[in-house]
Length: 512
Image (cartoon, rainbow, N blue to C red; front, side, top):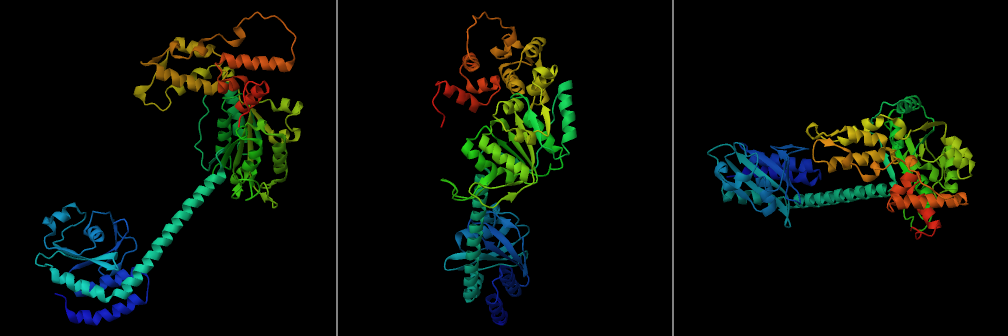
């Protein structure tokens, strides 16, 4: 039984303390200290209740715990009391079926658990635990503990309101953080790839041509010079750009990629430089541009030859002055970025023919790296093929190329370069059932004679250069079964350019 004299002497000071503070550590700590005085020989633990049924140990024998153990729903007597909102006691914990599913009951012999609740809302549970085999609890203990808690109605109500406000605030902050992440993702846009810490990849090959590229990378990477990476589609220009970034002084800073050929001209300026809220229809929020996202790091402009004259002008101004304006903005912002760019076009020819600004060309082309085609790399073809064949496989699943397979891949021109070789090796691995890859496992076009070996008798006819281009594009499209992606790669142009050409020939409708 509880000593009424202790209750009478300690209850008023407890009431005063709890009413003077809304600190939950003080509240639960003083509560457990009070019951420790009433049950001096037992262990007193207080668990705070969560809405999902979990219970967190917040005080033990009068000492508040800032990071106590959290008990999952159904794993402790505390979570049981939180769920049922009823007191429970057991004088044979080790044999009680209810406790058989609980964790960490240790050597407890008897336990009394009582909910701390107000107006049907439970905020905590108080547990009196005993290791003494002679100690037993009864319904009288439940009534007496509940009676004390009833006298603490006002401070318990205050704590309930405080915890409700705190939980609501935490939920709102969580929603705000989720919304901020969502807005940040929207601002970055779908055509940008931002990485603060790239994993450096190895450029594979032993040919003189690729060793020369690696040597140039080693020289230019530590500088801040603008680099123009030129080469046919699929030769690995983006890998070269990543290698430069990973070996630069900016390697710990953002690496932002933008595909200049994947966006309409009207959207590209907004993607690059950002826009202000309300600057055009649909601009419901201020958007950070890609150059701003790359501040302190590297901005890689892929397919830079596809930039429209208007965007070329704005990019040139940014490179000259180091500052830019968001679309609809009046205040410039300054950033510090290194520019790497890549193209499968001959930009000098584009300049000569008036399609690319000469002054921008020289801004981008401080140093030019020519990435060789796969055919120019000789024996690297076999090295790369064997690497792609077993990439990501365990030793037991490795496969090998037969001499006939090696002859086929060495004789083929690989117009799609490394990307085409990688796809061919993936297909060959899947199509083969044994441990060896032979020539029968490659797609039909790889067995076809090289383009320069095909002899055709043609009747000469007078035609313009434009008509000749049209004829070649249509024949290539027919040869590749109408596959526009492969056709664009074979022709060394972007899919967007191919669609524009076909539209001018009235072969397709305008792409929306």
